[in-house]
Length: 359
Length: 246
Image (cartoon, rainbow over all chains, first blue to last red; front, side, top):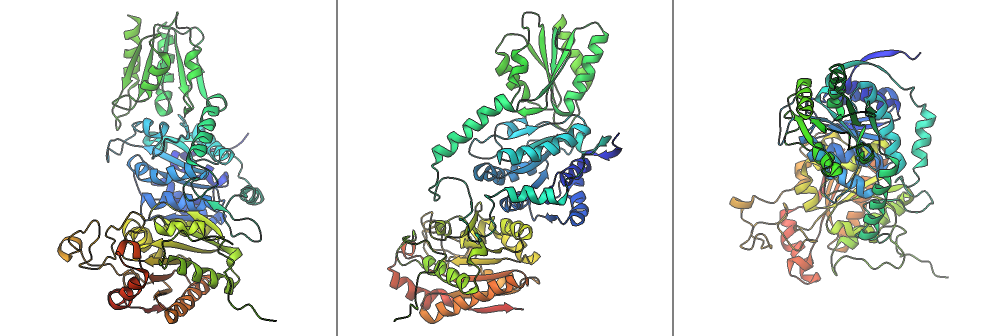
């Protein structure tokens, strides 16, 4: 039985990244994720990795881009308004097909917002944070064990598709502590093999063909803007079949479905348990990835039996609920249980919203 | 049997016609950089980080590894790239808007950290690609599309001198301002580029070579007039020389 370690969310993510072969991290101080760069600053020298405290969020994200261009598993993290600044580089990663893992420990917003937990960046994460209409796989954990597992997978997915992948956390999952089982670290040979497999990475020609890491079109005549965007659109479309991931809990006979992601998904799950104890047939749909959106989970529902859906999130105005509404298309009622970013949602709000559907 | 003493450097694609405007010194700078790489035997080991603007046109010209940077971010990207690939010879190729305006923080911070790569900075005192707007390096009095009444100190500030600014920092190892506006200076320019690359290969840290360049198109001058303008006016504001070689 693997050893359980009691860890803080930020540090569990950072340690998992190192174990997954991440050998470059750049970040900039912003609450509530300062433990991430601080952890990498201690840890990277131990594994011959590179940590740079960037002069800005913008520079840090571009540094992560530069390291990925050299073929190294690379990561950056921030919180909300910092992700806005990183979005320039994230758009370039999508355009230049660079695998980078970006973690967002969400805080309040818009603007600087409060430093407390939030889910106010749903649209930013799932609808393209930068220019150009690109998409990212967006993983959102509700426990620290999930955060560990998803961090590992985020690096694999980034390499698989050669695209940026986002870990959508929040101030809650970043700063709380829980017991986690960490994955066995990749060996140095494995880390080197992963880098060597990226034959597209720049390193000097060394007798071979030129390596060009750049957004496809424009001065590079290999591919037109249309070809590049059509190829990406096909990839995003394929994710709807291959990358959808969600948890269903007691939905088989559900009359009420509560749906939420991330830390709110965990609050929602406990609300479902309480509703069941009251005799309400409640169930849960919890996306593990918020992009691609788990349309299938909702399409499968027996709308004839359903009395409604409760969408819970730490965002006012609601954002996740809009995607649920677009899939449900009026086939059942939808109510929301919301808290403003910066204020943790109370389970009682979910119970109240669910009970309103039973009236 | 005659010996071939002058030829196209290997770093420039065969048969390529430069995308730079007629008379623009960018093509001379590219040639000098490629000759220096050839002489050092480093072409096959080189990777350059492209800035955005006219400097980006070099991609159609330079036959070596390259990473494209968002506008102004070349020094951030070169920093991480070089640290992850220390054996590769890394240089950025940037213009004045890219390096001294939108990328000022990235430039100064990389210099201050003493990152072990080389900056090739092409300063033509104007935004060329976008049609001739004021740059941080535009001379006082100069009319551009965004200073139609001339750059004035009270409203726009004075031209920024990047070599002098970087020379205020402790870490940089090599700082020089050169030009290829005439043959003797072009030879000195190549020596400076070689020295900068040599510094990098020896791991001595940040090296910075500024080329005082021209922009006949947006200066509204013929190529020859623009060279006279460099000699008679620009070089008085931007004096040539080695600022540091430690």
